[in-house]
Image (cartoon, rainbow, N blue to C red):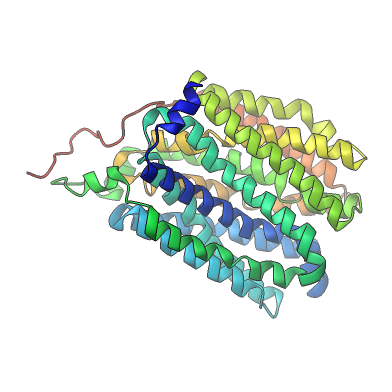
Length: 413
């Protein structure tokens, strides 16, 4: 009940910031995951293999740090709100244009540019929200924000199941322009982050490079942690539809239904462990969720029927996205105040860069083992779950830290 009362205590403006950031990440993920459902069909149209088409995912992930840096710097200088609006517009336009790609090369270029826009959304949206809401609600709101990722995957699953046979992969990308409508909501209902507004009155502010030098050890740790986390999520999600299509030869509708089931699990996991982290701590919640993934691997990767695979995938994503549900609040609380618009997003997306080889690696590993995607999925999931647990245990946390209190900063008189 306390949790519900905490959420009800949010003001209308605070709720609007949460809604805008949640929808921004949901729709960004929706645009990204359209690609994972149509890899086989893109490869067929352009007379290539799935591994070559999957390179588009690698490029998208690899370019996300560029977007995190550019949009993060803009957010720290011009504000979270206008930067978020510009980012949403850019990724929507690039998604739409992807549907017109005349060749695989052009599509790869467009997906790389899309990666820049995708890389900017998470950090800007998370900082806007975390700086706006009361500290006692950060855990559950962190889960809400991160639940936007599997919600976007869920939407892509539904659209794929309902419309793909009628509109093809190009039509799927064109639908991805709809997130641009979110800009009107942000413009009308969302205020600038109070912490950002307060910082504009400081007499002197250190440069980004000064803060990075001061917190270089923290940045390296955060990047390593997010590398493991990104292998954890992408290693259990990106090629799972392909695994179902190629290794099990399931129909479009069956793949869509299984994806819907495991994304419901992901949403439950993110919300549940995000809220739990407010009670037991960020690191304990992450470790428990990650450990739960290990015994699920055989059911998730080696079952033979759609029902058992759906159950395994549901439980796997409860665990994976349960751990992820803590990340928005954990990274924002660890972040230096001066660069909160930049630090979480850059750490997250540099981890994405280092993990961007995952789709190509898993596809190549599967194809070299007679299309044994189960082996490739299980290997990555098992190893990375252990790495996430170890890195999290070695780190620190700053649960409940008050934003906007860096030492040495003097308000302008």
